[in-house]
Length: 228
Image (cartoon, rainbow, N blue to C red; front, side, top):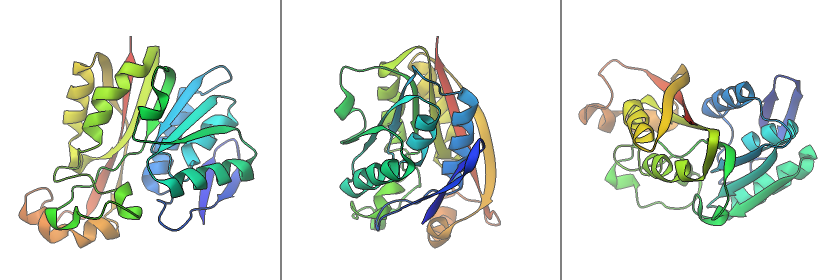
């Protein structure tokens, strides 16, 4: 089980089915950024890579019209189940990023995509929980797509919120979003001890120069990008 943290309401219990990424520190950091944007009735919100539906439910509780997308069927089922348990209305699609929402536009897009640098030896697993964090050698396999594709469906004045690790190139994200016509900044950040996945990859990360010899903490970053 995982916990949905809403500053305005008591925590509620969410189900995380086997193989679905359970909410962690990056989820809650992004939830805080989401609340700061003030989702409200009349807003169209898109949650890319919804997982358990945690962030989508956060937005729906504020009255927003929320669409959620995930490529994994288990995640889609999990998000739908959690929406029912939370008594919130969500539209949840299975698909690859923006494919299920072609022709639509949104006021707010939120995403906690895969962003963990992944050695070649571990990139063959395309199923299960690993798909929620494995993101190519530089951690940007999905981030780069979001930077390119998400701005196209963002309405004037709309905002994109993306969570990522400092290991996957924060400046690269800011530059790519700026190239797409958005005003991009780091909205929030936090430092947490390396989790099990990064600890298992520390020899490779250090050998490849992505992590310093005595570095033991990961920087989590929320990038905020706004369309003029």
